[in-house]
Length: 217
Image (cartoon, rainbow, N blue to C red; front, side, top):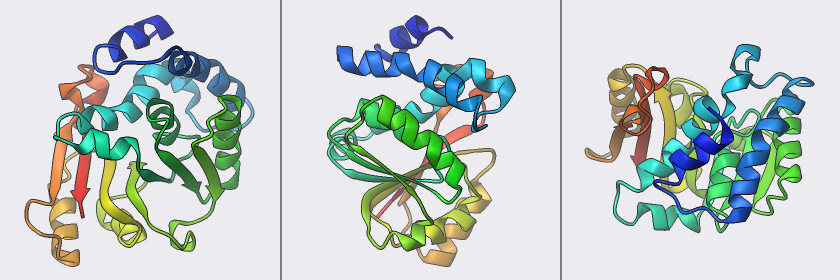
């Protein structure tokens, strides 16, 4: 997918400023440059930055549009991206939501080097990158976002005390058992966990079975 194809597709759902377009345009070159130094995207996937990484990140934003008031709530929120790796989903979301404050957290130092460098190059003043574990941050956020860093029963304990409004987790496969385990173990109320198929927005076989899992506080 070229940058122009990406902008054309995203522009159907989101109104982008010239600055946002410039920042999205810069992502491909920045990740190619940094991935050659520190591998955060598989070599075979580096040509698919927009369709497999940026759009996957923005699937969270597209889901927000399906729930009344949720997009507006997120747009001025404090957000933790746990296990950000090289900056996904945090950096694309930070470009799209300039009034939200993002903390991109990863326990692997070399990955945060990439996320920090990309964020700095884009001059994203709403992004802070930290090399730490979630438990050590000592604060809570409105929302937690993340992209498949672990099974849901393993992931939830890391963040259960870190969010005030919700978790938006990108995960693939049959997650019904994982959701049932988390709901039972942590006594989450019925109706507080929702799933949304990414393929309803991104009609590419790559997204078959991939979901946004939304856990409400």
